[in-house]
Length: 322
Image 1 (cartoon, rainbow, N blue to C red):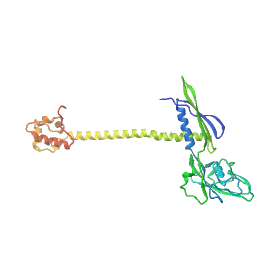
Image 2: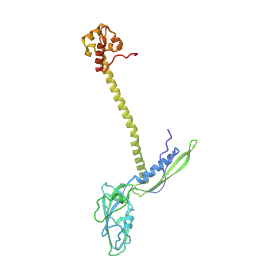
Image 3: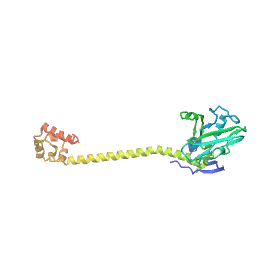
Image 4: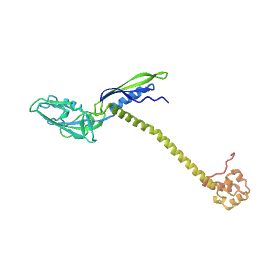
């Protein structure tokens, strides 16, 4: 068995949402295997919350402009995609914003439900430039995994004026890994893995790494359960076969202990066997067919009768040469 690596440790953490982890003493090749697997899971499989729909007063599609607002609707949607949330509910939530007059509109201007927490309230949404201008909108926030395009949601029923948004749910903004060789004993080709993780502040880099590891571990546990199930299946089958064999032996033993009369053969054949000191089925089964046929007065008819009676009990006379 190959040696296992050391536990991960943080070697650099300048900000709360950025960290570099190190795993050393990895067997040659395992740095890439583990690093690449974790990177893929971190970017695609972690859950988060994001804006999925927006409805803006007076706007019917994303290619519109809003009087008195500097940004067009497409730019506003791009800004909404930058909002990052912690969500304490599995149900979609609606947040509303209503601004009148000149203002630099930020995420903090949204009226959020209690189940939603905005971690970047300073995020820019739009700039209202006219004193009489207004910006009235509501957004729908949902939980999800990875990335979901607006195209995937086209079958959803929309309210009049609602616009679907490409949603980035993953809480990981950036991740990368690199490998350095290291010495373990006499070998110099063991690997030291470095994993860089930057999150959107909804979770810490440590939480992100643990979630990714947990996802991979659950997948591998499903694969490993196959071997366990096969072993259990083999055990059950073996046990069942042993049980059948035991019953068969017990049944055969019981049948061998029967008297000749229990076979249901004619009185004439019973008497011939008795005269030759064959009074039990057990004794009879020790005889070869040729020996039984040679008994005085038995004849071919008697042998056929005995064989037929034994066959019904799943028994037979000894074969020649045995």
